[in-house]
Image (tube, rainbow, N blue to C red; front, side, top):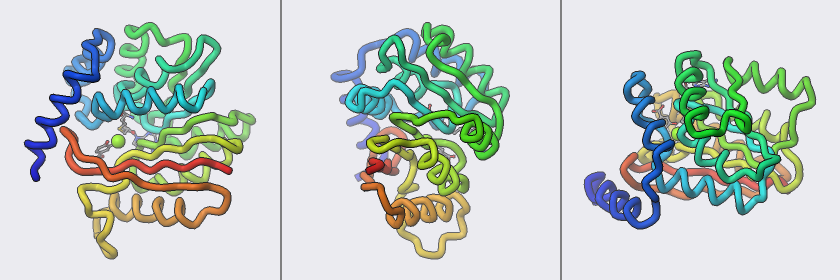
Length: 221
Ligand code: SAH
Ligand code: DHB
Ligand code: MG
């Protein structure tokens, strides 16, 4: 079992399930040209997020960690005309690239990018009475994940779906005393997720072109 095999299978699945799409392709091209790291969700994962938005019937979606807006475009497309998405990004450069990508996808009316460190933006949003959101996707810096879960719960209602990317970290998440701050952050998040009253949660391991990782899912009761 190897990353080469997982990548071959991802290629095969993409050919079957992912239609060639100019906006998504251009978003990845522009992000690469602008020097953004290639750490977006994969095409099949993006489509999965799109399906979740539809399944939940979400009208209000919050994303923490925009990068070039690739996952944003997938999710925003599943919103009804009245739907709105807010996405949080600390890097002004990433936010500018994302804004161009979201605009080119024809979604700028539906998506608002808030630039700043997410803990600060989330505190401001909560103070302004933002939310509740129907679906929240956590995908920013891993040491911040536990804080993002706290804020997500404050911005939720019963039935809100919280999804978090990268919670398995190539399997390193099972290491009790990892020195890697990302692994520690994700372990803290998973522990908090498992111990928080009033949510039902699980984690699925994933493999593919992006390697070996996992996504967490929690529904607020
Ligand atoms: N969701 C994107 C990938 C996000 S990558 C996709 O799948 O297409 C993580 C992003 O989080 C990066 O762009 C990074 O700049 C941003 N980030 C890192 N620390 C952050 C912070 N403290 N607040 C907000 N965004 C942050
Ligand atoms: C990293 C971040 C991500 O959101 C991701 O999907 C993959 C990798 C990272 O920071 O290494
Ligand atoms: Mg991620």
